[in-house]
Amino acid sequence: MPHISQLWINGTPRSASNGKVFDIINPATQQVVSQAASATWEDIELAITEADKAQPAWEELSALARRSILLEAARLLLSDKYAKRATQQVMEETGAVESWAAFDLRACIFQLELAAFEWANLKGQTMPSERAPGGTILIEKRAHGTVFAITPFNVPLTLAARAVAMPLICGNSVVLRSSELNPRSSEILVEALYEAGLPKGVLSLVHISRENIPQFTVDIIKHPYIRHINFTGSDRVGRILAQEAGKYLKPCVFELGGKSATVVLDDADIEDAARNILFSAMTHGGQVCMSNERVIVQKGASKALIDALTTMGQKIRSSPHPNGEIPPLISPGSAERVLGLINDAKSRGADVILGDLNHNGSFIKPHILLGVEPGWRLWEEESFGPVFGIKVVDTEEEAIQLANLTDYSLMGALFTKDIEKGLKLSRKIRAGHVSLNGPTFGLEPSLGVHGLGGGTGYGNFDVANFTQERFIVITPTGAGKNLPMIVNDL
Image 1 (tube, helix red, strand yellow):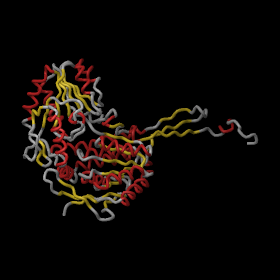
Image 2 (cartoon, rainbow, N blue to C red; image 1 turned 180 degrees about the vertical axis):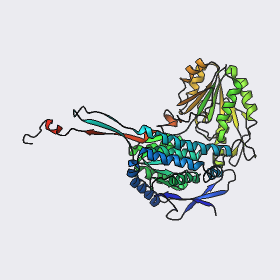
Image 3 (cartoon, rainbow, N blue to C red; image 1 turned 60 degrees about the horizontal axis):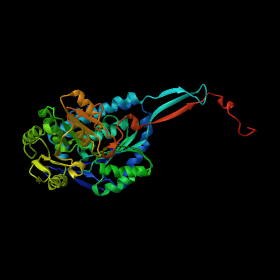
């Protein structure tokens, strides 16, 4: 019997109320590797209700106590009881190579630790009252209430941890909707948090079958107990969620797509640039929002860079090769979509300088295209695959202008040996994070990633976004005697 990922409601794993399940497919083998309980609306409403009931007591618990639970969950995930099982689940559900699954676990643990140490930023402040002389104003950072969190498939442990950890340390309860493609990864995180001492009901986990996701998600967003939404995923879905949340004026944090550009100037270290570009574009098959998707190179460096990229790129092997560096995409449909972007660019005149224009199930080899232009699908749309396009330009100014010619604003990179010039030009790239002589697939862990709006979304996974400032004014006793009378005989 395959493993069945359970719903977690009021701190207890349980089947769906109607007993239904849905299958989880390994993209490498196309075999069923597990099943998940398919939540009914009754299950979901109970999960929301129990989370809302548990939230006030959770917020009243000291921030230091909440911190201890997150740190204990991080310790548990490192233990023999969890670590091997967690990485195996990521590999089975997503087809990831072992090194990626191990990275996912490490980054998941870091997300828990990062949120735990934010407890110190939950302090309020006081100030004298201007309305009531002698009085005091208390300014407190308080939780929103119950948060609805939606996590994607590509980095399942890490992004599930990010979706819940910061809301939890801030005193919110959370209803987590797992990705329908890999729910076991979310389940193991929830299991560890409850073993670490999380009070019952504070975190609910629901799995929703693909056919029920659109309606159930709309119904969850409009539920009166849901006060905040966070989502990591595609900008297409993010726009739909934003419209639904906007109907009820509910705050959101969205970390959406990317179309990162790497600018390579004439004086760049070509070998270094090529290695960084390929690392950024091909890691996890390009299924990362930070992946490099566009390369803009000055003419003087173009031949050397193209030669280096094709020579190095030919050595990258995709699974099912035993030592493959890049995994299958999450589904054959994803591979077909990526190939569609490539063929569209080829039909418009781009040269395919690496790749065979084929896919085998979910597997697709690395592809590089030369001569990709703005307005083409491969320039405009996030591919989420092992492919990028190259555009050759004459001037530095043109390179920066083209780097910014996108609706996305997540990551960017620039290569030059002139650091002073590189710093000046990096400031002109409109992205939340720019790597000077480094990869787009890379970040400072304590900073995280964030977009500047558009297709990359808005908001940060931080204390400011998961708390609200509330004011209490302590008025001195007897101050009411000084109020003007509005009725003569009061």
